[in-house]
Length: 128
Image 1: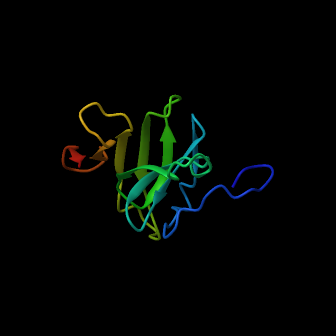
Image 2 (image 1 turned 60 degrees about the vertical axis):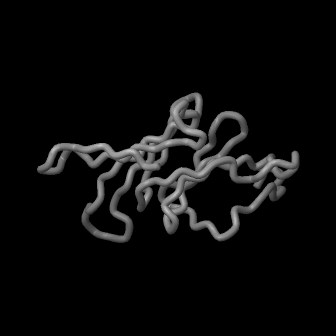
């Protein structure tokens, strides 16, 4: 939806927004959000459909439930953290770091890392 005029620009069909992480505005008129059911970060181009381009510019697998979503000022590097979900106590403390322009991949790549507060050493794994 375009603000303030309220014109609908596109609708990501069959997607389930992580309500806590919400939407994140990115440079270049892009918007990002996490689909908690599928476990994907989506980068949208809300004006793409008007120009004959797809609404969804890219998708990247991420750890869920997504609690926080952040980006660097350029919008190239994004971070998604997990958290409580519907639980009363923390059970997941994963960070997924995303590089939307990873040189070694045609698609964006992501890395997940367990938090340092665990008894075992932190480990990182690339998500294909």
